[in-house]
Image 1: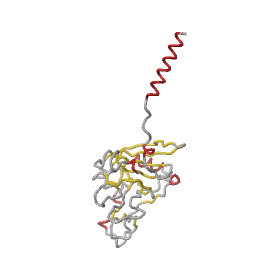
Image 2: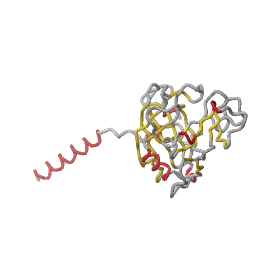
Image 3: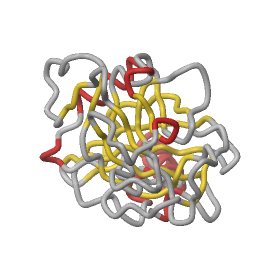
Image 4: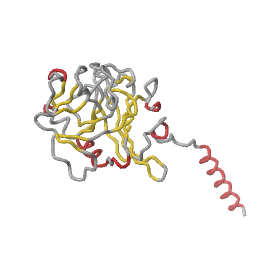
Length: 233
C-alpha cells in the first residue's frame, strides 16, 4: 500500500509539473491577420526594418493546422524593409505586406514537376519600371518605345538570380506610379537585393516544386515587431 501511495504521489506531481508548462508559441501563420485564404503560405521575416537578412519559411495547411514544410535564410533589400503601402521606388527597400504570386519565371525551360504558370526568359525579355510607360511594372517582350531601357530591367542579364523566380504581386494588380516595380522572390546573388526577397538556389528550386496555384499560395513579408510586423498582414 505504501508503495502504491508513493507511486500515485509521484504521478500526481509529474502531472502537476506538466500542467504548469506553458504551451509553445503558435505557428507564425496563426498569428498573422490574414494568410490570403489559401492552404499554402510563404513567410519572409526580418528582425527589423534595417535588416538585410532574415528567414523564409513555406507552410502547408493540413487538417486545419499550419505545418512548416521548409525554411531557408533570406536576403532583403540593401535599404532594409519599408511599409508596402507607402514605399517609394528607387529606395532599395523590400516592401512589407501580404501578396499573391501571379506566376513563376526563369532562364531555363520549365522545371519538371512545376505546376505554377512559368514564363521562360528570352533574349528580349524586360521588366518595365518606367513610371511614364503604359507597361509600368509588367514583363514586356520586346521592350516598347515608351519604356526607356535605363528604366527597365533586362531579365537575361541576371542568370543566377533569375534561374528560378516568382513574381510577387506588390503594386502589380493596380500599379501606383512611383511605388515600385519588379519585386520578385528569386535565388541569391552576391549580397542584399534591390528590394526583392532572395533565398539560396536550392531552396528556390524546392519552393517552385512545392507551390501549387490551386492552393492559392501567398507571401507575407514583414519584421518581427513594430509597425511593419509580419503579424499585421
